[in-house]
Image 1: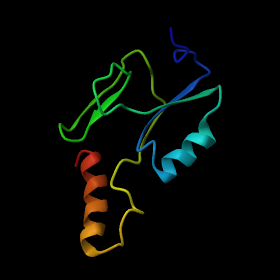
Image 2: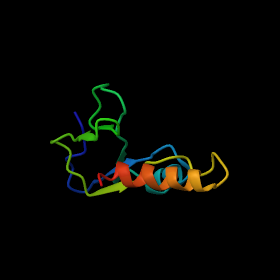
Image 3: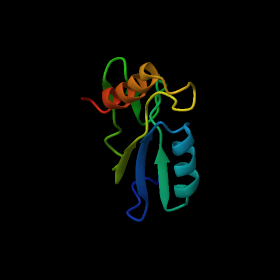
Image 4: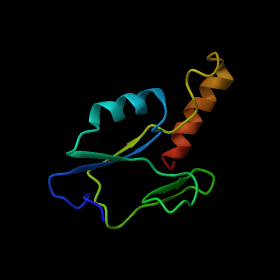
Length: 99
């Protein structure tokens, strides 16, 4: 049973949940009245699933979402910001948003 149907509970789906900004956002919003969901990248039976390769997302129809935050993309701190790296960072975010 899930308490996500509770009218007082705010539900947010967040991609890029393990990154620098995603981690900080999770710490800021994790409260009893605010539930954060991160989509799984495999078919592990979680409520939400995201596949960038297949360009698809599976949403749980029972859990009503109040917000979606897309922070998915290439790690901005992994490399020097060469033109190639900047292109990778931009493309990874644009493509994950479905453009």
